Image: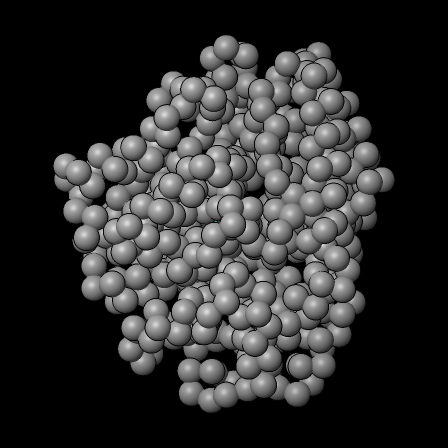
Length: 448
Ligand SMILES: Cc1ncc(COP(=O)(O)O)c(C=O)c1O
């Protein structure tokens, strides 16, 4: 594969840019992208199994989104909603309120990234309850601003040398059943993860000082961990019993990604606060907090305002995203294609011992690579090599949580592209097992 132009861009990139904002996999410089296909600066084409990190749910450069942005740019590009009003913002808000779970009077606060809205959720929960403590989960990721990172616990490196973090943040184990921190199996488990919170409430963490429990309905960056429904139900009940707000981070799971409009709908519950981002505007910068009018009213004027938030270009992109998801039945397609993908990957698992677990819902799927069936030790080298070779064969494939292949294609994907992706993955794993992928690739493909 010729990657001359891409390599040149990477060399310049390294000259001017800090390493802090990127995990490296391979030298892919994007030139254009359409639907599920990405083209690089050398004219190579790839099936996109990443969707710009679960952002491009509607497929790259959907013509209706491109048109909506162009039309809006002809009118005006931005006028800050911190001081004035605009129609695209009101129209979007009406749609978002209709789409999010909960049949009560809701309001919205906008931001530019998932991270700032995670911070906003902390502010809202503290202001509404008058309590300061926040509970979140080990291996969760809520963003990179100080508040969001204070709630996150997915990677030590992210938190090194930059403390202190926000006070009163408490982290508990997420129910990671494949590698249970309590050594239990799914069927014999007594919800130890939940018990630890109950024990904390009994001995050192007064429940009446806890403002919120913040959770991802499926823990994405942890390696696509789907919690048992009983855990979520009991956690929700614990919140209700203690007047603690139940806050869901839907930044990665929203907008059809998991085969429902929002990930929390798999658990039949209505959260008190929802944090939205990533796919909300098909790649334009936008995030949002959705909650009851009563909760939203607890924050004072300009206590969560950003000059460029709710930019009209992002608003029309978001409104059109919602329309496309409905018109093209992308929530349904996410479920159908997700089940198809899972089924195909399950066949690979039977064939390759290196695959320890396949899990997910809709088109968010993790392939957990291990060194040994008994120890379930994470196989980082395999993940790095397989992603690199898959890229050489025309697949945008990455890994996170040290060893989990991340499968999150646009929700427009079809069976033919899934078949092609699985074929490449199958061949690549075979080559890895035969020792045909050089250790040299580990210098580039580091992941995280
Ligand atoms: C679950 C979750 N929350 C929050 C964030 C942070 O969002 P952003 O990168 O848009 O600030 C991410 C991003 O990966 C995420 O996956």
